[in-house]
Structure formats: C-alpha cells, structure tokens
Amino acid sequence: MKQLWLIGWLGLPATALAYGIDPRCEHLAGQRPADYDEQQQQDFLANYYALASSFSGVHGPIPHEPGRGSIGLRLGGMPPLPCRRRFALNWTKTEDTNKTPVLPTIFASYAFKEIEGVIPYVEGGFLAPIPVAGTRNLVFHAAVGGGGRLGEHVQVGVRAHASIQRTVGVIATPINEGDPEYADLFLASTLGIQALFGYQIESFTPYVSVGLLDASTFFYVGDTSVAVNNLHPYFGPDVSAGVDALLVQDRLRLGLEYYGAPGGHRTLSVTGEPSSDPGFGRYGRLHTVRLRLGVEL
Image (cartoon, rainbow, N blue to C red; front, side, top):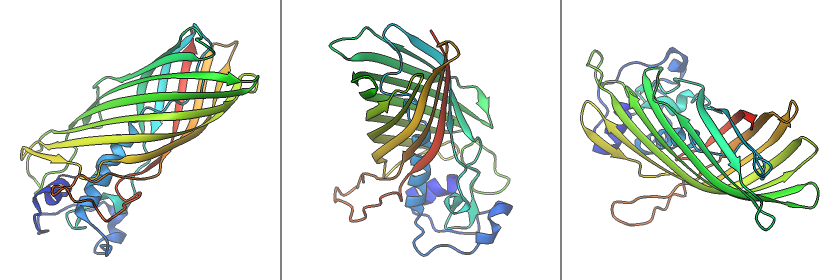
C-alpha cells in the first residue's frame, strides 16, 4: 500500500519501481479500468479498515434486564478485498491487504436501573496490541444507550458509539524490491449514532438498526516519514439486522448480526471548493457479519 499512499499524496508518476502481483490477481494485470484513480483507491482502503472496527451493538434495543450485564468475546468479520481493490501504483502491483478474516475484541456491558420506562446501559471493548500477522493492533470501543418497551414484545432504543484503532506494522510494502521494511502507523476512529427496533419472542429478540457513522483515518509511512491524510473520510449510513438471544438458563448471551456501511463520504478539499463527485460507495463501504458471545452476569 506504500506506493498507493505516496503516489496519491506526492503525485509521483508510475515507473518500473513496482513489483509483485498476487498470482490470484494476474488475470487483471494490464487491465487498468478507465475510471481507476489512485486517490480513490487509497481512501477506499483507509475507510474500509476503519469501518471494520466500528462498534455496532450486536444486540437488541435492550441488551440486558436492569441490574444485569455481560462479558465476553466479539468477532467482527473482515471480508477479503477483491483484486480490483488491491492494485496500486497505477495498476502495476497488488498490496497484501488480506491479513486476517476477523477482528476479535473483549467486551463488557451493563444495564442500569430503569428510569421513566428507559433502561440505560454502557458498553466497552478492547483489543490488546498482541502481534498478529505482522502487525500490532490496539482497539478501544465505547457506547452508551437506552432502550424501552412498547407493549409486551416491541422494543425501541437509541445508541451512541465510538471506536479508536491503532495499527503498527509493515502495512505497506517497500517501494523497491529488496528495500528494508519499516513499521508504518495507521490510525482510525469512528463515531456514530443508531436507532434500534426489536421484537422479543421469549428468549430471542430479532432486531434492526439504522444509523449515521463518521470515520476518520491517518497513515504515517515509516521509511519516508510522510504523513498521509484521507481526503474522502467516510460519512454516511450504517445498518444492521440480527438476533439477540439469552440461552442456557439465562446465562449465555449470544448475538449475531449482518452489519453494513453501504457508502458515502465527505470531501476535505484543499481549496475549500465542494466536490462535484457524489462518490457514494466509491470511497468506502463494508458488508460483514459480527458475532457476540458472552456470559450473562
């Protein structure tokens, strides 16, 4: 990805510096799309990995009864990027982006005493910077929300969430084959708000959520000391649909959801002029599955 960031930021021409096309992508070599753009490719990659660490609830509008909580493991899917999203340096090489299929985090949540029909709750998540696949990732999650009942089965709620991600490692390949590798730094943060709707059927609560998500990223190239900003950070909708269940004598909390951030962006123009390109989906999107498995306390 280093070539991608440098070309987009410095405007360097494509030369014979490139090397290395994944054998699985060789069928696309030399077939650069007419609308290929280095900046768009760079920003899509940055937004994609920020969206992968966003903190959706993987639970219904009321995650627990008042005075109860849960602690456990979350697994967020990171679908491998197709070849067309991995080409860089004017479509002359591919980047090694598909390092891991999941983002695991430890989570904890707790619901407070009901206030005027609303059950407030807090949530947190954490991933320690343990070396995995050549990188060290530090992730913090936080959320606050409240849910209530409309009748016996219907649940509604609102949830605000945030996440911070720091990745250190050889994220980008050297510019020349055989050059020494230096650690790079990738920073990402997300901030969002969601409206949730659920329908409880005994121990199961199918639910949907609709929200608005903001993502910001920053990349520091280790061997050149170049700081690269995302010119099209994600700002757009996110949606989810899943089921939240309390099983095994009300001690096992299980959540499974589809999560999608279908597209959108805001343009940070150097000149201050608005962009004429709507860019919906071109500058970042994600469709994935997330799992939440915990012990109810």
